[in-house]
Figure 1 (cartoon, rainbow, N blue to C red):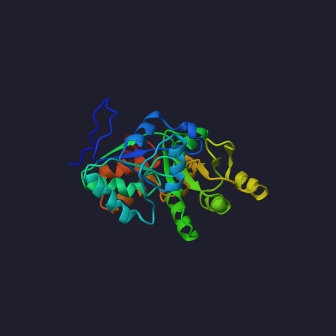
Figure 2 (cartoon, helix red, strand yellow):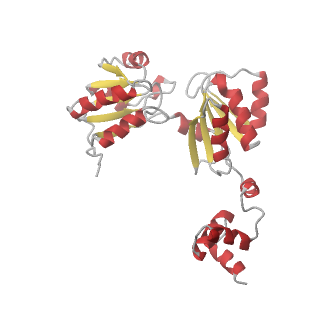
Figure 3 (cartoon, rainbow, N blue to C red):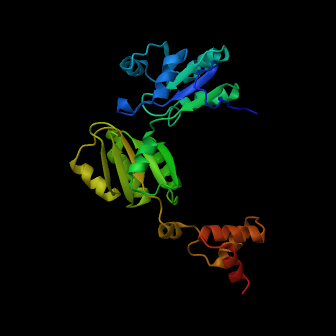
Length: 290
C-alpha cells in the first residue's frame, strides 16, 4: 500500500519528498507564505521553464539550484528527479503558472513517485480552472475539466461528441490563436449554450465575458482574441439530454427490454431505466406491472 504522510502541524521540509508548489497565474502577490518557505528550503526546484521560475524566485530573493522538467524531457528528467528524491533530497515542482500536475506533465512525476513510494504533498494556491469556474456564474456543484482540445479537428469533434449529453458544467483551456476555431466546433457539436470566457485571470487586463456560444462567435468576429482563455460551458439541459438519448423514442417497456437483451437482470434493468429517465425505480416498476 502506497501512503503519503506529512506530519500534522509541521512545516519543516522533509528529505525525500516532492512538493507540488502552486505559483501565481498572473498576480505575483497571490503566492502564499508557505509556498515561499518551501521554495526557500528545498534542496532543488524542478521547473517547466527555469527562466520564468528564476524571475519568480529572484523577485522574492530566493536562490536555488534548478532543473528543467517539461513535456519533452519528462521521461529522462523524471528518472533523475526520482533518483535524487530516493537519495534523500527534497524537491519543489513548479509549472509556469498555477498548480503543477493539472493539465501539466507534473502528473507523470507524481505517478513515478507513487510507484517508488516517495512522499508527495501539495502546497495549494492558484488554479485557473477553479478561478474561472467560480467567476463563471454557471453551476459549480458538478463540473468536469477537459483541458486543451486536440489541434486535429476530427479528434476535437469526437471529444466534444463524447461530452454532448453531459449535464455538468465543462471547462476548457484555449490559446488566443485557436479560440475562434474552438468556439465554432463547440457550437457545432453542443449547440448554443451559455459560456463564460475568462481571460488574463488575476492580471491587469482580466476580463470575464458571460454570453452564449453564438454571442461569443459574433463578438470575436469583431474583436481579436488576446491572452490565455479558460472557457466555462453550460452542461446539457435535461430536455436536450432526453432528446438526444438512444431511448428517446422507446416506450418504458422497450427501454427495459433493451437492457434485458444486453444480459441485465430485470431489477438491474429497472434501475438503469430509472437512472436514464431521472425517475425513482419504483415508478418504473409500477408502470411495467400494471
